[in-house]
Amino acid sequence: MEQLRRLVDAYAGRSQKAVRFRPETWRPWLEPHGAAHILDAGWERATGPGADRLIDRDGLTAVRERAGADRNGDPGGDADGLRDLFVAVMIWGSGTTNGRGPRHTAAALSDPRLPTVLRATRASVRKGDLGAAYSQFAVRGVGRSFFTKWFAAVDDWGPECDRALILDDRVFRSLNALGWSSREAAGTRRRPTRYTTYVSTMHGWARELGTTADRLEWILFAANGQVDGDGKPGGQPTRTRSHGADERTG
Image (cartoon, rainbow, N blue to C red):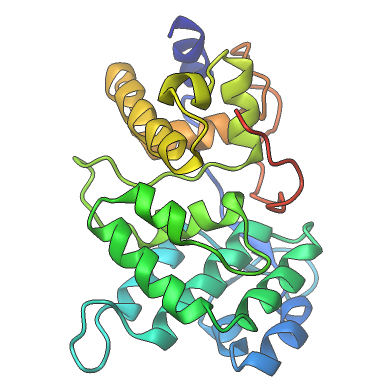
């Protein structure tokens, strides 16, 4: 815990930045699926040359709120709105350097299971059943690193609850460097149980350290395995790793 406390202290005063993306890189992959309109949803223009835009967690929250209940009042959410949120999450998770992000997103959009999976996993997350959500997510092109981003985006529980957290390769690398094993902590090889154990552990650590679990998750992401506490590696990175780059087992 002291090693983790030093790492949290090293990142004091730093925060996650918005992610740059290039609409024209994404457009040809999204247009065939009628999903390109999300690229023109009023995202802030990035500084510098070109037409890059910026997307951050607040932007994802705004898209989530627009998804809301469907037009018939079904709290499962509007199917088009959920798809918009899914695409926004994939863009946010890919940034400008993950060239596979648009291709993987197009693969998911072409999967007929996607609408059902998005509604089912959103419902499970909102009920607090993260293990069920993990078990339910099976869509082409989307692995753990990205579907846990979806869980975090659709979770609208208050800060006092153990909200869903992202578990991508960089976070796993830092957990491993800290000597934490999801398999050992959960006492099983079942990945849904290991994910829920990770979430509850992170929230417990955050309470002990006087921070929030989503900030702790970002710090582990930014450290990318360099957990000696100097806060130097990683700078202000964006989430650019593809889900298939390094599916560590923890």
